[in-house]
Length: 333
Image 1 (cartoon, rainbow, N blue to C red):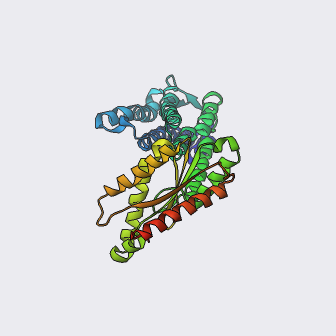
Image 2: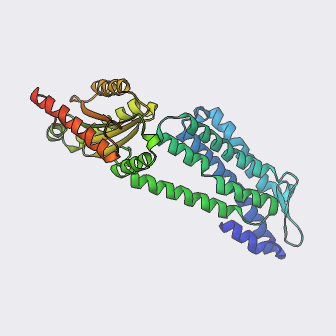
Image 3: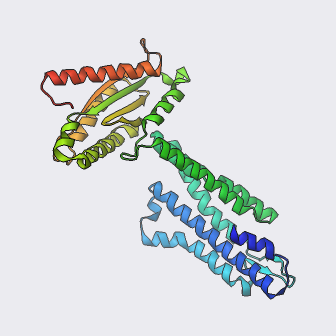
């Protein structure tokens, strides 16, 4: 934005100072934009787990086009390749000007399309939301950039600011709705999701809600300390992600050592197998204590007609299971 302002103020201003300011502002602006697009590409592809950036030679190959733009920008004073400033101090496009927007926009368009395709493939709602954010982040900047390419004038910086505002809002939503310890959805986001899901009755068919908490969690805190207790919750959250995310489960930390998972399009056999998989994975966790979850579940329908009733039914089933464990002498608190 700063260099766009300098460009606007100096464009058409004759004299050594005006021409120098115009030339420097454009050279720096072109370079910074190419660098910003490259950095966004690297960030977005890293979040998506792309193999494109796993080797040094690939990184060098990816970086080379941006380096070319920077070289062309700063040598345009002599070559007039990307741009030049005429005798009246006016900015003019050079004979290979289009290399700059093509290179810069290819970075953004490629990673946006990649993220969009990823969002269509994944079942996990959390990953889908992240990929959609990556896919649509650049749209305001791209639209403004197209206007700048065809109509000239400093439109691009406005588009970039709109993209940054969009990303800032998404980040704030993530902070509001994400549990800071485990990285899972928090209770507020879970309830918002339930309201959204049950606003359309057809979407609630074959929905199971699992409520669970860690057996003997108070004993872990008392014997090993609260830091280790926090680590135990992180282990549980990682297992839940591995076990439930592939099938599209919505996972949230409900509070304390309580977690909830909402599974759509599942059968009771699927849920029983999922509960077994969760505890099987926890049994293999490398901790100085055993981790196991008490899990109660309920299905929407058969007299359960609201999300509050579903929550109460799953909660009641959880405590029935915990009472049964208590009678068997198993530590559940």
